[in-house]
Length: 485
Image (cartoon, rainbow, N blue to C red):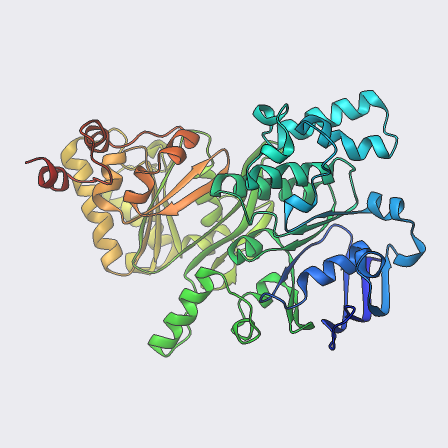
């Protein structure tokens, strides 16, 4: 049974001469995460207010149709009962701070005080929220002395203190910096794992694509499109309706327009997680896509999930969640041997891979077995190829990788050699704590000091020298000479 159901709902504000919501219908099942998108004034916040019961109780006007929460008409719930079922984080956090509490700690407890939560349980919950939302340094501050972003975190934490079954987040990251935004979406993921039903209003459509499993697109107060995220956010019609598409989708749409043909992405990892039989999770919700002719480095500390990720690409491991696609086709029903024809893999430890009695037999064994030529393997993943190699061998490996990329192959390399990354790669993926943290150029990666600290990575030595000399964004010896000589 749907936990949220709107049937032919329309709404007109007092003194307005038109309906802002016009005959909309949709249903949301328990545990689903819906992204509510659309242009400004398309009706997103009004829909949230209807589901929360603020319309027409607080915002008067004319409401038509049926609004059901957990199978019961919303007007049959009392205000307190609605608040315990449906939590709502407002777009403007200033309107959500109570104004009657002098510290963040007291603000977090305020809602629980009003609903009779036992004191010890209340203290325990407040401490948990302070930890989750990184509010340790703010706990004794007055909520009205906080920045907009800090207020937003406090307002969201206060709402979640009541542990509602349904969570409505109206642009929860609008005033947050990138790190705080990432933290909020980690909380969204946690809420989803807890089985909460979530409605997310958000203009950052790339994040919507990553965290939401369904999309509701509003245009001029009507439902323009609704369905699964992968179906809606790859449809150019979204742009016609005033919505936005993820950057990756826009790139491929523009590419298709320029080339005059539709190209399938050669290798895609979509929201992939992997846990070993003993329950240890090695990779969490990783997404990445690779184009022909790319040489991509994957870096990160030991245990970050790098090797597991590439083993998922070539079928040595299978995702616990999500999927891997080769040229648009899922590998879920493909054998490892079939995938190996498309994705080659060089092991981190060569002893795991070499077993023939001569080099000739070793090189030819797989090709003979599969009855294929070397050029048929279009994607190659190299796990620590420079480990134990001298300078000449490292340069040879780099040149081989670059040559393969020029031939249209995808070359994905896991490495701890940062100088190797700078010299041979234009794209770098950083993994830390089992997740992808950033995907950018070497210059962007190695001068993102916050990212490096979080991922326990160090700059290449030349970047460190440039930093000591007071120069930023330097990547090569030539660049450093230009600004110092």
